Length: 87
Image (cartoon, rainbow, N blue to C red):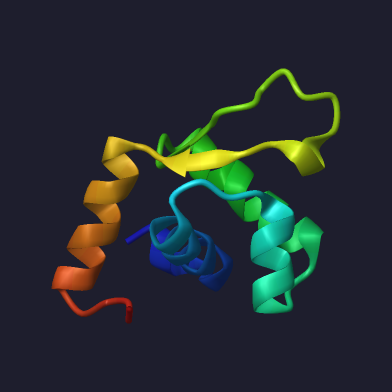
């Protein structure tokens, strides 16, 4: 339910499950949200263990690539199964 508390988290989680590996800038561009808004959501999701950074050694945060974790996939699937988020 924490994911549903702020719509930016839902947006990021949905995009990550559509694309699998994605950057914050890709999500921001395709959703017309600010890069700052999306990056913040990605940090929140990473702190909760729902997504994982594949490129933590990049020097610029814009280049970080993320994938959903097993926990993130489970949460996403539960939200879909309970019709709490659309596809």
